[in-house]
Structures are given as structure tokens and as C-alpha cells.
Image: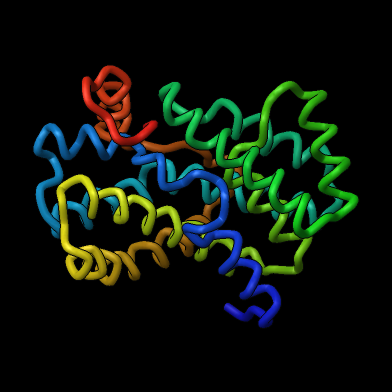
Length: 231
């Protein structure tokens, strides 16, 4: 995985917790998993997040990011529409749909403002015509391709940031100490890279996820009485 210093700086900025997409306000159903006793400690957290990355949204998001990245490099407008359309519907619950679309729109708005590019302006108009905001991984894939960031680097960074956000949520929810949170991140390094490699090997039409427990916890979270997170 080779990446120049400018590309690295952009990935670090775009996927930093300080980037204004509101990632801190989403737990991807983890809040209910903690409430129900499914995630009680660092080891359980690492197993849970590994499943989400390998089989859940991480799997489908990886395919969407790659589809968008490749479509931009190939000047394939139909391929980009394909990714945008599927990104808009590939969410099993309303909360998970909001998590992706709200972050995707915020990401696109911020990149347009700070790293302007004519393609992004044209794409924003196209999305408005299509009638939906961009899914988060699609927006990251588009911006990464325009910045000359390789698909491998963009995908590894995106999946790592996704895992890190879930770990950050668990540190607050379980609660876990900061060191236990970092132990979980250390344990997730290999699964994140394995998920990246698996995504690169799969054909793009092998799209979908299989994480029914995550979907169930998201459904339960929608009616959870006391909540810190939006998903």
C-alpha cells in the first residue's frame, strides 16, 4: 500500500474524529448491544466489531467505496450512479440509513468547502437530481479518487476509522478504560486488513451483508428508552 504524504494527510484529516461528520453521535446499534449485555468487556467488543467489519456494514461499505473510486477513475458516470443508488438503499434499519446518509452528506459538504473540485460540484447536482444524499463510503471513495489516493489506502483507512468509532463509543458505553479501548484496536488491526483484502478480491456485484444481530440491536435501539447515540 503506497501513498504519498499529501494523500496521507488528507486521509488523516478526512477520517479523523475531528472531521465534522458527526461520527461521535452514532454507535451502529452498539448502544443496545451494551444495554442487553451482549458486549461487556474489551474482548467481547473486539469480537463484535470484527463481525461488523467483516460481515456487516464494513463488507457492503467496502464494496461501495471501491465502486465509487473505480467509477471516478474510469470516468464512468453510470457506475457512480450505480454506487450512489445502492448506497442509498443498502441499510437494514432507518437509524443505520441515517448514520450513513447524514455522514455522507456532511463529508461531501465539508470536502467541497475545504478541498474544492469541479467534479464534486457536478456530482452534488447529480445527487440532487437523483433525490438522495450520498452514502458515507461512496462520498469517501469519490473524494479519495479525485485526490489520487489509492483504493487500498482509502479502504484500509475507512474501515479502520469505522472500527475506531465503534470502539470509541464502547469506551463511553460499557464503560471501558482508554487502555482497554486501545487493546481492542490492536486486536482489530488484522481483521480490518483482512476485510480490506477480501473486498479487493470480491467482484463488485457481490454486494451485501450478513450481520443479523447488528440489525436486531439497531432495531431495538430505535425504541431504547435512554440513549446517548443516534444509532
